[in-house]
Structure formats: C-alpha cells, structure tokens
Amino acid sequence: MSGHTQDLDRFSNPSKTADDIVLGLSLIEREGKVSPELLKEGIEFCDYLMNLLEEVRTPSSQKEQWISLTVRDKDAIKESMINIDDTISKLKNAKECLNKVIESSSSLTPEQIRNIQEILVNVTMPIWRKRTAEFREKKLKRGLIIDG
Image (cartoon, rainbow, N blue to C red):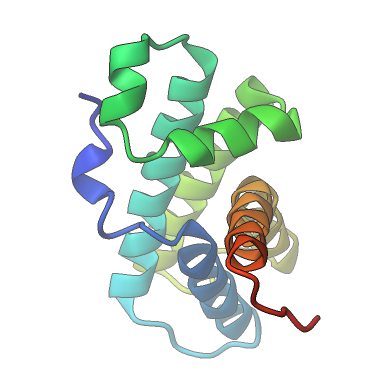
C-alpha cells in the first residue's frame, strides 16, 4: 500500500482541509496568528497531495484500485489534466514555505501566500467537483429534488 493511506481518515475531505489551510494563510497575510498545528497539517497535506499525484503518474494494477479508497480522487485529478510534475514541484515549494511560516509568521510575502493558496485550491478543486457531481447523481437516482 502507499504511504499516504494511513492519512485517509484524516484527509477524507481534501477540499475542506485545503479551505482551512487557505483561510489560515489569509489570516497570516492580514498579520494574524495561526496555530502551528494548522501549519503542520498543511505540510502533511502537501505530502498527501504529492503522494496522490505520484500515484496518478504511475499506473496501478486492478487489485490496487480495489484496495485504495482514493481511486475517485485520482480519477478526478487524471480527468482535470493537471500537469503533475509542475504541480508536485509547486507543492514542494509550498511545503518549504509552510515550514518557514512555522518558524516565523512574517517570513512569507503576500505573493508566496497567494501561490500556496492557489496551488491547494487548484489541486483540490477537481476532487471537489467530482464528489459534488457524484453526490448529485446519487440524489437524482433516488428521485430527490436538488436545489441549486
């Protein structure tokens, strides 16, 4: 199994985790205080996303697909046609920046903060869209009306 499967419960909703980190970074940008735990979670989340992207890059066997709980997320990333190598390098940079912020909250420029926020949103947006579409399809199949 891959190294990130132990974090599946922790990052079962990647979009929410990314939103929390983005909001925390916005607070830092406005010179507010953010808990180091949130920043450490951001670093671990970057690792999770990099592992997920690595799995997308390497073909997996049918047996692994049945075991992995992140097959839908990998499919969403494949369908979004994200440049995997570029995204992984941006996530590595974001991880390094988050490490700097833990040491000193004033160590990042607003541009660096926006870059971290952008990469987290760009990677998790396809996952969010796919999960939302699946949710709506399930509701439609059940005959329930969906507003919005």
